Structure formats: structure tokens, C-alpha cells
Amino acid sequence: MMLDFVFNAMVTLLVTIDPIGLAPLFVTLTRGMDKAERREVAIRACAIGFCILLVFGLGGQTFLDALGITLPAFRIAGGLLLFWLAFEMVFEKRAERRSRGASRAIDKDHIKNVAVFPLAIPLIAGPGAISAMVLLAHEASDTAGWAGTGALIGVLAGMVTACLAVFLLAGRIERLLGDTGRIILTRLLGVILSALAVQFVADGVTQLVVNAGQVVL
Image (cartoon, rainbow, N blue to C red; front, side, top):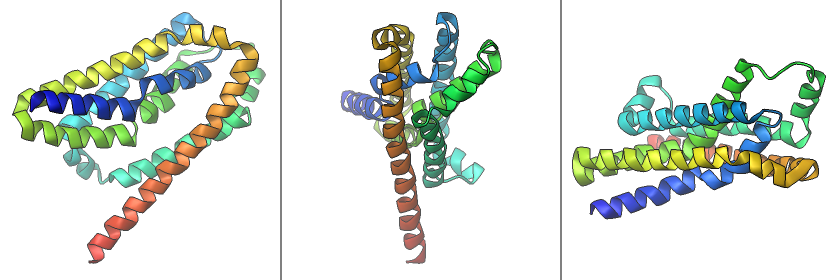
């Protein structure tokens, strides 16, 4: 029973967090940073993402209810923010701003901001991963009590560690791509990210409509 739960938790979090899929996004978002700055962003983003998912795993639905936030609303908000980021990636708005400030070094505030949004939220700790943690926490408690909860925290730590490992290899990925590859990848990922954002919004709206219909009935 415990082994089945651990395997299911690993697969679920692997799909929802998708460490490998975050690698090219990390390369794009940390463009212009040196190795030390990228390492700081990676560690900070993974630490924040882990803490957020851990809070939702331990607090679950109670935490959301206390804030008056539903998962569909969180999904819609995350989708809108991701769409804004995708728009900037496709039309190189980020590059324009950076070229205007090329003489200015990347400051600590920028590093902290990138680590929090969009890396920690909503790419690592996104609506899918948060929903998965809430559901898996209930299953863990029902399966093996505190032992199940401990196993879930271990699985989560493993997934976040995988994200960190992927992020730390981002410099090599960027060197392989070169300038032309980076430009192509940035725009391609912008289009993909915009589609993901629209899907987040669509899923959130659908769930809100379903919930409203259930209330009426």
C-alpha cells in the first residue's frame, strides 16, 4: 500500500512540476546572469517552491478556505500572469527593457523577483502541483497516517531537488544553443507558455462553472 502511494505520488508530482520542462524556461528567464547569480536564483526559487507546496500539502484545503481562495481562482490568476510573461517573451519586450539598461548590472531585487515569479510561482508551485499536493496529502493521511505524510514530503523534496539539478545545468544548455538558438527558443517557449496560460484559465473557468452549477442544484 505504501509503495503504491509513493509511486503514484512520484508520477503525479513529476508530471505536474515537470523539472525537465522547466530547464529551457530557466535559461530564458536568467539570460544575462552569471553563474553565481543563476545559482542564487535556482536555490531561491526551489526553496520557495518547496515551502509553498509543503504548506499546501500540510494545510491543504483549510489554508485556501481561510484565505477565501479557491483552486479554480488560483488557476485563472496564474494563467493570466503566465500569459503576460509569454507575451513579453514572444515580442522580446524583456530584451528591449534590458537593452535600455545594459549599462546597469543585474541587481539583487531582479534576482529575487525572477526567483519568486515566475519560477517558484507558478512554474514550480503552480495550480496543478498545488492541487496535486492537496489531494495527495489527503491520500497519504488515509493510507498510512503520519508515515504517509512523511513519505509525501520526501517525494516532494526529491522532485524539487531534481528541479535544482536541472537549473544548475542551465549554463551548459545556453552555451549549446548560442544566440540564434536562444532567440528561437525564447519565442517558441513564449508561444507554448501562452497556450499553457490559456489552458490554465480555461480549466479554472470550467471548474468555476461546474462548482456554480453544483451550488445551484
